[in-house]
Image (cartoon, rainbow, N blue to C red; front, side, top):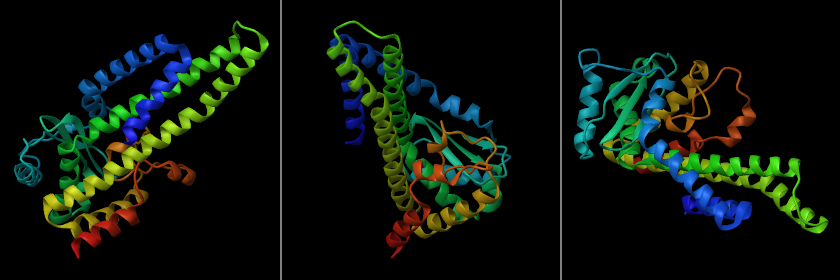
Length: 276
């Protein structure tokens, strides 16, 4: 429903910008961006976080857990990558079970016991099985195009246009409304999609591992230690991928209001309720 609303908002913007022609232009842009996201987002995300492939000899326990969970989820085990960071975190990327990867930080391996590590990885494999990474990437692409329409309209206002004064005034008011309101709505919907997929991956991961309490314990640890050890490669473009939002040194608390993740307290409460 949220994705449909986001696509409808893009369609309205394209139509308002240039009627049928504008709608076709922005539909083509949307397809082009989503095609790129579909094929290249996993490699770009891994490269952005300096992730390197880790061998079975380096991390036999990690391989054992991933292969066990993948078999339980009836999916091929994804390649495993290691991020050179002491900040504990993990993410999954890729367009689906056959084209995915799981990346964990060095800090995560040092912090979690085996039970908690299995819970974290079950969350990430659930993202892969549910194709959440692809959904979030498409949502981000559509939201970006909507914001781009605002930039185009802003330049149109600056350069002026034809028509009589009343027409220009009406067009200007509509353009200003779009420039201000539409990108905000698109961002909020994109964040709502990200948060709903996190709740879904928590529930799916808890069922996959069979231990909701372990995932709840892991989330509480991650929340506490992420703040103590800020993540040096953090950035807004890939924050939605991680199991908890990466903490940045000196990040403003106000930014937490526009988080890609639900509150840890709410996620933990839902998991504790599943364990009862």
